[in-house]
Amino acid sequence: MKSVIIGTAGHIDHGKTSLVKALTGIDADRLEEEKRRGITIDLGFAHLELNAPSGEKLRYGFIDVPGHERFVRNMLAGVGGIDMVLLVISADESIKPQTREHFEICRLLSIPRGITVITKSDTVDEDTLNVVRMEVEEFVRGSFLDVGRSPMIAVSAHTGAGLEDLKREIVRLTAEIPARDTDAIFRLPIDRVFVMKGFGTVITGTLIAGKVKKEEEVEIFPGRQLVRVRGVQVHGAASDQAIAGQRTALNLAGVQVEDLARGMTLTAPGLLETTQRIEVQLSLLADAKPLKNRARVHLHAFASETIAEVKLHEGTEIRPGTTALAQLRTEDPLLLLPCDRAILRQYSPVVTIGGALVLDAFPLVRQKREARVAFLNAQASGSREEALLARISRRGKDGLDPASAVRETGLKLSVLQPMLAALAQKSQIVQAGEIRIAADVFKKSRESALAALEAFHKANPLVAGISKEELRTRLGLNQTVMEAVLAQLGRDKKAEVTAEQVRLAGRGVELKDDEAKAKEQIEKAFAEAGLKVPLMKEVLASLPVDKTRAQKLVTLLMRDRVLVKLADELVFHHSALQQLRQILAGQKATSPKIDVGKFKDLTGVSRKYAIPLLEYLDRERVTRRVGDERIIL
Ligand SMILES: Nc1nc2c(ncn2[C@@H]2O[C@H](COP(=O)(O)OP(=O)(O)OP(=O)(O)O)[C@@H](O)[C@H]2O)c(=O)[nH]1
Ligand SMILES: [Mg+2]
Image 1 (cartoon, rainbow, N blue to C red):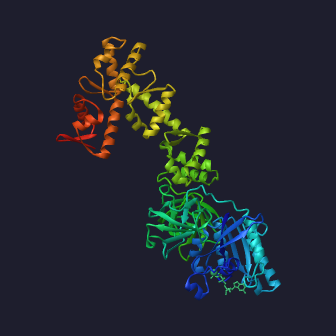
Image 2 (cartoon, rainbow, N blue to C red):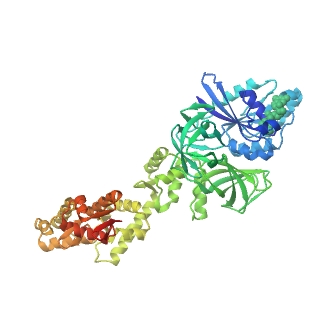
Image 3 (cartoon, protein in one colour):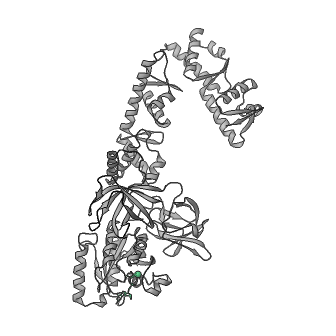
């Protein structure tokens, strides 16, 4: 069953609430004050089921908004997630200020579809109605509500005239509305919070992306509290799950009503992050005043509202009717993702002045202006793949890890993976572990590594190679990327990489065939022995080379730190010592204290080996001796 959210819009008293009631039978004015004053103050909700010509059931959630200019902020809290707007204009008053303001808001939010509804048709004669029609036609010309594209219908909530036509058009437009992405990361901006007798805390909102199931754990932003979904209601009926595009009520366990408020957002746990710096494409309305750099504005995004400072990336002001790239610095943390839209209202007097399309919610702190602008243009390009490549590129040598990619794009890893694969296929990115790096940046790191090696050999002709760690620091690479660079240099036979050292291929100390073989044998003997190391003289005796040369090979292996000497006649392979550290790390989880007996049990070594090993671990600050015991650090 397809679900669609319909919002009303329009000037006060033009008949929005009456229209919703005439369509659904539900009075969306739920507050006592609303009923007494006969105006809508806050958002109201209703629902309706209609049949498509095919017989398919269509489910509509209505969000009825207030028309009063003082309550535009409440209107903004509801309009963010709608699929279709009914722009309500009364036949007896025609276009009024909030007709314009609500209409501009819908345009700025890029609400894709709508119907212009001329209400109170019973209050005017045919000629007046035609005049109003013409005025309104002119008013919506060129917009998403242009009568060439969208219906315009005259109705009366009192006589019922036109209501059947309106329903028919709603159904017709529904077919054009693409289903929302239920595979996206779940996001539900909260627009109402209340206690329900016998249930406890309930929140409602329009589910803008993904889905949520009963008994799932969700995270509340900005506080990052984890709560359990005890129950789900969709359009007023209990359900096992709610999907994107549905009006949703969730009964939450483990949170008090006082801890929740309109403007907070529920999401899938552990994936997203709030921000107070948002890069946007800002559009200023034609009738707004020029907006100066550093101006303060009210920012409304979905149900949230805060104050933001506008930092322009180019020029000193935005001219009315134009767009510009800007960074919004908000007073409160917000949860926003690329492609979200927000509304800007002037600080004072408070009127709607423009809209913002989110391009990036995690700007780099230090970035050259041209690079930033180029990055933002790539985000605005409309190509998801290009936008992702720009995100990888801007991270430079460090590359982008999957968790950051998810957090920045708001796309699930399963959606990002094929895009990453396509970029790799086109040789635009390189993978190092799970990190992705722009191919040209990686190539530069590789070239820098070769240059650094060359320089090292030149400066140190008598040394076999540079330590990996030193090379890494010189190049300013992270561990993962360094390993990938070295692996590639090794594969391409450009460099020789040992456990701890790197040298250019063919540089360092030359070995003859039998020497190379002997060296391999020594390494293998110690690697396979683990902590139960053989006697060096026995290993040396079995080699195909004489004693002096064998000794030279052992010295080489120690210099490369493949073998580590702990005491006379006591040499270990570095991998065995690495494993020992892991054993101790595992032990630490159960008990951080250990004595010689316990150490022998854990490692299976004799006392003769245990003492030098423990002393080695003390030196390496893996353990600390306290009396007869050691504490694992
Ligand atoms: N004659 C006539 N009166 C109508 C019609 N629709 C609404 N009204 C009247 O117009 C007044 C305002 O209607 P509402 O539905 O409350 O208007 P609204 O747009 O919801 O107003 P706000 O929510 O405050 O912006 C009420 O007194 C209605 O009875 C109609 O089709 N014909
Ligand atoms: Mg109303």
